[in-house]
Image (cartoon, rainbow, N blue to C red; front, side, top):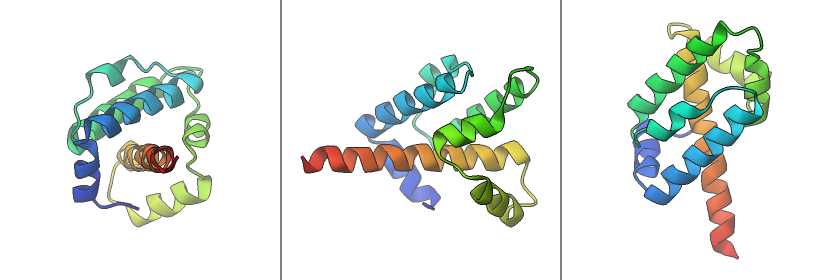
Length: 119
């Protein structure tokens, strides 16, 4: 996956960051999770990460919270999650998941943008 300087560089592009937020809203809403927090996100990795961790923890208590549904929607497999959790045993569970979410959503946006520009 991408390293932090690359992620921060991609997030500083207004076009990419706006597309990132649109995709994040879509993924959260289609997983039956509130996405109102996305409006106030800043294009900086640490801030994004903290807010997503907070939202995951806040929604964990909901009876209809289905984390695997969200990860499936974002396209993060159970094998990826297990491998990444094993590689980052010292990190908080939701912190690892938030990192995967940011990287995968950004990756989807960059790929879509690339193919859009090719046409």
